[in-house]
Length: 447
Image (cartoon, rainbow, N blue to C red; front, side, top):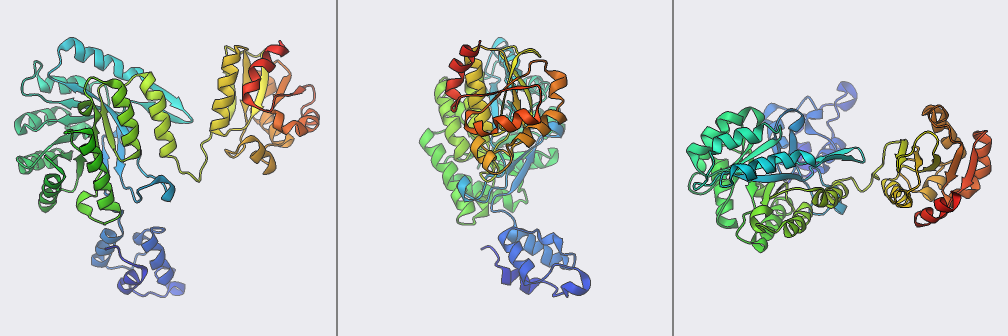
């Protein structure tokens, strides 16, 4: 059971805050209990009390790190079931599956395709972060050599292998990159735990059903291994979904830390050969509750909606998504192309830029900082004004970069036309349409 503020206060050293500057008091204890402050902010707790309180006030789901360097990812640490309750902490990561049961040509084709999905959207790099390397006893390729090939991609690896000796050999060639060893079950958990701990790898745990999974995790914790990630299984879509949801509920709502670990969902195995179903399942498990989702392949057609969904789900709902201020050339625009301006609210940008692309007219879309608000909201808040537009034009040296002197304003802030003309002498300020969908006809008529 989670500690309350009074419980924390009883364990505090009761220092006088005014004399020593320490925040230890009832108010501090309440903030710790609510998760607003870290217990380590007080230097006067005894080591034993600090250890007890740190464990009791930790998130119901353990935070696990996998990979190294630029490929280090944080999984878990979640505190709520639904995004609107607070926010989700660690975004879902996507992996593409390989198997030593595949022939060399198929393996090489997959390895070549993985780096092709790599782009940036609203300041976030979107790419295949992980590679799942599955072991089959009937494989036609050498598993260790396949792991070496996959490691050359510079992605975080997940080794799907239940054979202890094979897993040990595979870890030897990739342990420095801190992979996940997804191979512990009721029959081999002791040996798998030993080699995972020796290699410093996160251990993936699986079970024939949710009860066996729970028992195996409890046994691993008894061995002192809490660097775990739980496999939701691939018996059926229904079972995998039920397992993923029940594990999260047990951890978050029931405070059962045996299930308080991130999860792996292998949709490549749940819908083998059906990439469309895999994309649909990946969307579902991004919301509920896959920490790592494994797919057979990742194309742009799958990535664009899937990563867009992830970005929305794992963005703080109280902080709007923004695009970076700047000049965005569209349809091959250059310094002589007409200019339009709008706010940095991501939804506005994508709607407007989409319509501009559809028009086929070369134009420069100039985005200034408006606090991530929509056009009318930014105008009402004073973040979109003649002064803010003129200030950004000066800071970004727009006149030095663009020769064209036509600037189209959003129609909903037509009231700014005169002020903008006064602030930007020499510019022909034009009031555009009220809605983005009207931009296509508007621009073509202008030509």
